[in-house]
Image (cartoon, rainbow over all chains, first blue to last red; front, top):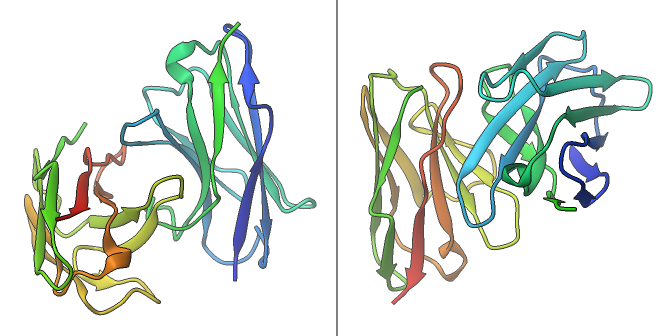
Length: 120
Length: 107
């Protein structure tokens, strides 16, 4: 059973970079045709796809965030990471990592989520 | 971006009721429509993918239908554990967008 777990700071100052890591267990991040994604949910709101990375390094980013987002993968650690630069209060959200079945952004496994608050 | 409109935004129902949630898209997406369930404080859970395919481990009381711009999620007999918020998502075109959610509450 694949499991995902987010980690990182829960509080980030405005204008700084939000950095999160997702550790995958129960399966290899390099196995299969899966992509590895980040999705966020603003408090009390709906879901927003941020982007994904493939273990071979290809990436996709939501155009609304593309100028500020970097998603990378570390196959040796079975982890992938999110960096979101120049954050504002509007980036306060629960951030989820998720497995994308095949690049179609159908998310079949999710982490528990981590609340990141942007505040000074 | 493709706009997703779910209706209703919330509903009250009793255990055993048949519940239907609708998702309409701003343009045709063939059958590239997925449904998720989310309980408070938890991550979403994939229920249905490509309109009508039941994800492994999901009870058969959940079903999905539709194509083009109109889709439905049906719960044939609502169970206590089904009280949650349900989201549709289109996986036809980037960025892949979600509906605003339908909250199913206990009557």
